[in-house]
Length: 435
Image (cartoon, rainbow, N blue to C red; front, side):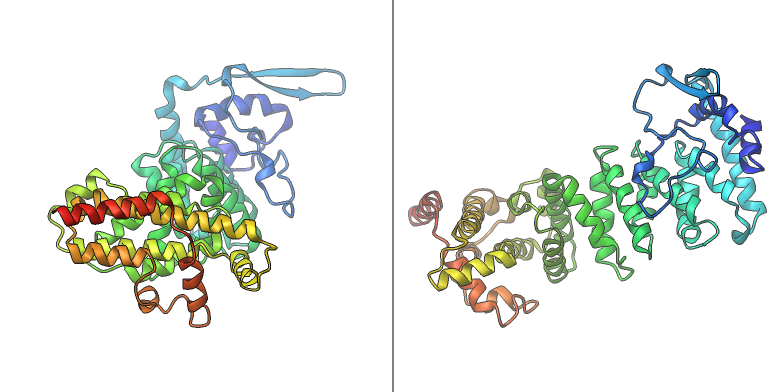
């Protein structure tokens, strides 16, 4: 292993030699690295040749003991069995690699880092410490013309190997979110890596979504945040909508009032992710009773503000349900043109369901969670039914814009109530009369 590291960092005389491939593949099992397929590279980038990437080109999802590497000659084909022969001494292997990597970083200036050094980092990305060493420096390497190609490969290797979700992996994801990539080709490569990363561990989506949202709300906002959110909602739409609502709940629990920035953020997310974002899942989760939130609310002095903020966001979701296509269908409907009537009915079904879910929440858990008084409850009822004055819906940030306000509010107001919603409203009124 020591000899492999020395040659990998040096001339790569035998590490990249075709006749040593079987031997090298067996050594690489000691790193426990998942190897991304070549197909994740952008078409405009040449497929990495064997001398550039000695690792196997397929993801190591199969039983390593059953793997084989073949070497073809003019007259015969020799197969080399590949097995995890270093499983008993992984810590020793990691120690050897880390020592060599740290020595290189201490000995070399940033501008003298070699392509071969980045190739070794890619091969060793199975070790979380290697990922932590590489990711803070990756942005600089990606913008270095001499290192661009191996740095792109390293970026994908890092994304493909965040499988453990330890605190160290969370730190890697946090660094990935902060990276500012400039060229379209590298951004697309990065987004492919993020898409893979989301599926590697059940907690990865929550971590990367939370870090992206917090970055978007910070002063150091990354211009790649929205494309990243688009990938998340496209890959796991329901889970992403649920997690987004939980992040919104957490932010509303701050002493600082986050309603205005959250409104702007939600509008932008819906604009970017409209085909994929599930508004029903989002509003249900926003109203859900989480045990940790309920515990915090016991001593939270701004619970009234949080309650009204949630109601405001629910009304915003109704207005955000008006896509450009729905807007066009509503305009045609006013002229008695039923060309897109099905689309308009679909929109009305969504709005009616949001109103029903909200009334159900107001009748049941909202009063207990937020100790809502009669006036607050009545105001919330009026607001979700679009019975308040129009300025109640746009006064915070002047959205919808003035040119669309009357049309948007009328379009939502014209949605028929569900029978179950009307029944719930009557039950709430009846219980108050008896009380």
